[in-house]
Amino acid sequence: MAATEHYLEAEDLHPIDIVETLAESHAWDFDRVADDQIAMAVEGQWRTYSITLAWSPYDETLRLITTFEMEPPEEKLAMLYEALNATNDMVWDGAFTYWHEQRLMVFRYGLVLAGGQMAGPEQIGRLISSAVQNCERFYPAFQLVNWGDKSVEAAMQIAMAEAYGRA
Image (cartoon, rainbow, N blue to C red):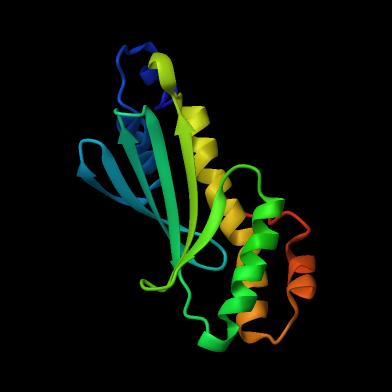
């Protein structure tokens, strides 16, 4: 039996418990911030991504936030926002934004589990993997816009092909 299969037999399983088990099985550094929240670091090809998952029982949503540092020159912010727009047109399972004050690029996704639905380890694993893959895919494009003096169109050509790697 796989490490995560025993969860499928348990009733009233908390989604963050599943995330914690996935983090342990992948040997990711993590911190169980609260009963409803976990933070972890996942190593990618380009960056180490900070990933936080939080369960909101109020609206029955598992929220994922993936961040990585980016400090674009102020004169490049307009192009970065244009690149974010182009990026979000290409991503169907979440959205990127830039938190200027914190100097963080952010990928967000909310998995709605209304009506007592449960997310299994495969679904949560895919959620985390997809977040890292999207960050890996678009990181070079953001770099080219910010520091490579490339147009948004040219930078997006880099992101047209799926990134290869693992999360």
